[in-house]
Length: 388
Ligand code: FES
Ligand SMILES: [Fe+2]
Image (cartoon, rainbow, N blue to C red; front, side, top):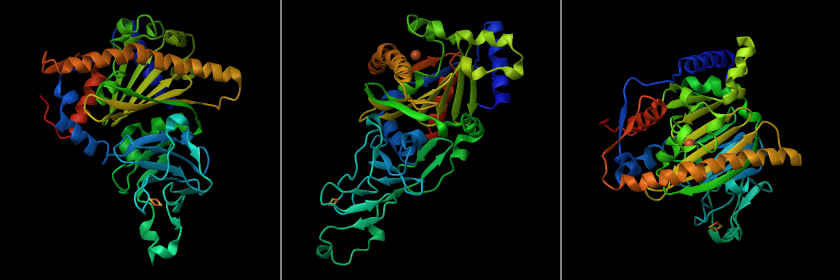
């Protein structure tokens, strides 16, 4: 975040603290329960949001060197993302062009893998370059004249920009991440995430709709109740800001130490150090700036509307090279996982079951939950759904 923007945000948060207020929308928002359980809507989401729409599948720090790769099947198609010899990130369908075997396996949760400069299919040994070209066919005579360029790996559109690796799972139709990020692009660029190292990723599966997982992060209203014994003492959840950027959202929650900023003149304020900044990057990424590092939550639908799968990751400003650093970042990883695993997600799974009970047709988002309403409105708009 640029310094001028930090000062602006800092002033807003001080205003909320002084007036015992927070960002509010004009009116409450009634969100249909069908949003979380309707199979037709889930199919539409899979197509429009997880196949046609570019997604942030990883960060620059996930693929530090040429030849590094990870795979991802969660968007509904098997995808292989690899850093080429030229340093550029390529994405392909992870499907061998001989008879369709899965070419490579490297779940982000196990860390990226390294090729020896090419991929060899585990079935019959066809080999492909990091640029997807078909390099070698075992017993090639058996296949007659093979049009090798036409049998290269099927390419998907991929762009690495400001530390984010975007891929369009459904096609190679080009896109521009800055256009997608809208007015948020300069702010994301200012963080310098391309210099961050990947610390750890966990893959979590929960019996909750993917939007309910994202909604977990989009209001500060619940912090002093649900998190009273964990993170409530660290955050001033009742003084949360809200800024929409197209379909994206920024929400900032002052930390308890935020008030100390008053001791310095505005142009020396380090607002980011004393604030948790939550971005919902449309459609499925939540990025949480945590003062000196960041977490990402990349959330995908599961097999039914009642399930989701996600990558929870920690990225840090410098590689953890000492035991002390490892202990420090392990502690951070534990806090982030414990809070959601013990508090937010069990409650969310109960909500998901309750959605099927017929208790209500709509949930009510208060004026004090504007980011949540904005996120759901954005989804409805992208799916061309009518609002109630
Ligand atoms: S399916 Fe890959 S070499 Fe046969
Ligand atoms: Fe929470």
